[in-house]
Image (cartoon, rainbow, N blue to C red; front, top):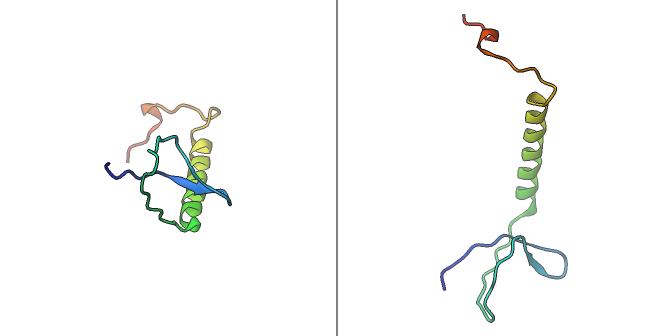
Length: 72
């Protein structure tokens, strides 16, 4: 069986896969723990970026055309 990397999380009782995957019975597994701060920090930066982009390109923003761009 080829190696497969699956994202999962621990809910305090069990390891839960983040996406469905059919694991065969008695399959051998390797579990690697990833520090939550790395994922949490990446998530926070992603949310901040999305928030900034939503504000810059929101529905209430006017459309700018080539005539609105100044050349120097």
